[in-house]
Structure formats: structure tokens, C-alpha cells
Amino acid sequence: MKILVPVKRVIDSNVKARVKADQTGVDLANVKMSMNPFDEIAVEEAVRLKEGKEHHAAGTASEIVVVSIGVTQAQETIRTALAMGADRGILVQSDADLEPLAVAKLLKAVVDEEKPDLILMGKQSIDGDNNAVGQMLAALLDWPQATFAGKLVIDGGKATVTREVDGGLQTVAAELPAVVTVDLRLNTPRYASLPNIMKAKKKEIVTKSVADYGVDVADRLKVLKVTEPPKRSAGIKVADAAELVAKLKDAGAL
Image 1 (spheres, one colour):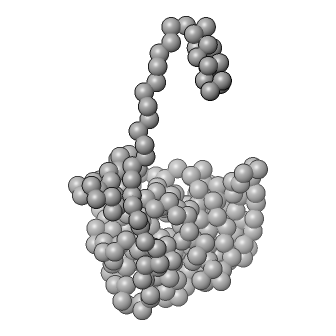
Image 2 (cartoon, helix red, strand yellow; image 1 turned 90 degrees about the vertical axis):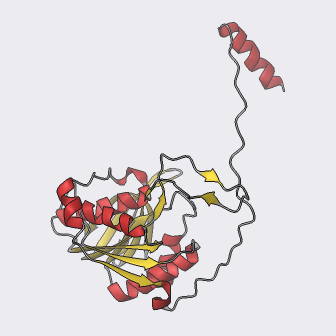
Image 3 (tube, rainbow, N blue to C red; image 1 turned 90 degrees about the horizontal axis):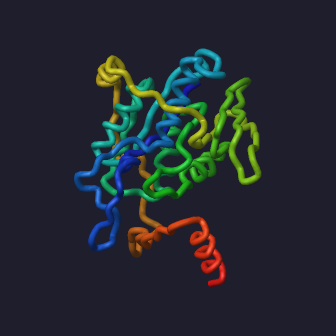
């Protein structure tokens, strides 16, 4: 079974994002970048499927292909995935920050070439927070989809996914090939060891351009303004519990 894992290069989750002075977007200059955390979980699950870790049978996956759409530096993100255990990478080079529909169209073109049995991907990226590419990709491919996976079992040509919903947990089954988007509780990604980081340098990364796929990536959306969240007002200290209760009563009366 071949697994395709899309990954995205985003601002590191520990870095506080800064908005550009002209409010046209987020300032990426001299900012630490890393793999989108949800994508990291998808890579980890794919590697476990290959290794037979957790509840997966050994050798469930035979090959893991990682694809990223972005700037040249996204090769570093792909190398991270290769160091975690993926087999090879594809970089679709684009200096533009593409919208979810354009990303989904490009991924469909990659899928048409690679013909994977399963697409494992993060449920959303932490920069755009659109939570849309997985669903759009499944629609374009006309494949079944299971989103927000908290547990994944592959057996008998079927993916069984336990997902978190508002009312608790829901279990769905999808015939392969399928698109599965992963949530935080699926696993804890590994740290790549130094030997694996060195091995990853020898693994193949093919660089393509958007033009190679003949896909329409024109923007459908227009960003009007990007602003930082309003600053929280300072709190107050109270002397004792009685004063706290009094303040809460006053607040409730407002």
C-alpha cells in the first residue's frame, strides 16, 4: 500500500506571529519555520503503518511519499518527514501562498501520477486554519473521506476511523483509496534521530513546478485586512474571597 502525505511549511507553533505594518498579511521575515503540527502527526501515522507499530500490522504500508507545495525552503520540511521515516519527496514549487482549492487541485494532479492507496494529511494548517484541503481533495478525486481522525485502523482494504465530534466519538469506515485527515490525539510524533537525519539527505526529492501540472491556481478569494487579536485588558487583584464575591455580583448585575 502506497501512502501520500501532504505537508506544509508554516511558522513554528511556538513563535508569536507578527502582522505586517500595512496589514496585508503575516510577516515571515526572519521567523522560524517548521512542519505544520497536524501534518507531522500524519507522517508519524504513515510511518507506524509501515513499521507495524501500535495496532497496525507490520508492512501495512509499503511506500510513503511526502509532497509539499511551497517555496524552495519547503525542501527542509520534506527532509524532516524523510528523517521520520518517509521514503521520498515531491516539492511543487510555488512562491505564491496558494488558496485551498488550488492546493487541492495540485494534490489531485500528484495523486493521478502517484496513484496512492491512502492520503493521510493534517486536518488543517495552523497558518490559514481553513480546514478545507482534505475535503476538497476528496471531492475532486471522488474518493471517500474521513476527517479529524483520532484513531485509524487499516484492514481488508478499508480504513476505519474514530473521529471526535461534538457529541463524543464517531466511528466511520471508508473503502480504500480514501482521504483521511488527522487530529491531535491520533499519536505523538517522534523526534528524528541523527542517523535518520543523515539518511534523509540521500533520499530523493523531486522538484516540480505548478506549470508542470497545468492546473488553474488563480485566486478566488481576496484578503482585505489582517489584524492582530485585540489586547486583553489588565485584571485586578482582590484582598480576600468576600471582595471577590462582591466583585462577581457587581459584574453579574452589569
